[in-house]
Image (cartoon, rainbow, N blue to C red; front, side, top):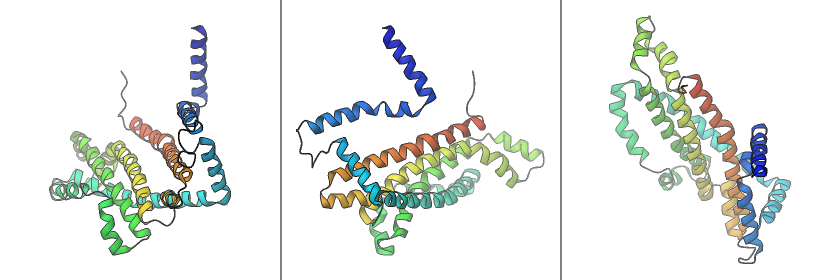
Length: 269
């Protein structure tokens, strides 16, 4: 029992010093089970490759430069679509959240188009723009936009009206109230919307690359299906999971926590 407690204490101290350990350890039994099943002969290795096969394919594609190029293409598309979504979504959310007239005029339209899935646009987008970057960018922007707008509206509505009235009583203009009171108060919700939107946009990007792409991780996985290369498909899935975990857990989540703490959403008892 003492040995178990000492081992647990050492693990806790190690994770505090190297947080990445807490991320890797839960996957050790998963990879071990995967390796056991793959090497047991239950399935042909061509259909169910072992972790070592995936690792070899990873290093081979990295050496050839294929995987870095595809990763770069996917990330550029995601960032481009996300940037456009932010530029459109935040002002639209601020307008809808702060104006009753805009809310009445835009909210039904917003909910209508939100119900139409991003992939549902693909048939008509292919007729309009063909198999290209415009189609992929539209789908990403469409997917990212709604979480940002809806969370921005929620953030604006969560700002106490007395704060705006107090600022106006001190002589602040409506634009200054919007910039210095409403926007900071809504910022935690905006960051949450951006985090959710990027997650949805990442999945939409992979789906679009599978259908219309000529490069990118989604295209790599679909192209591997044509060649019957299960190992490349599994590698693509692992790369997607690892990459999104890095972006979400190491970048977006800390920004969301810091924003909440800065603007008073974290209270102490």
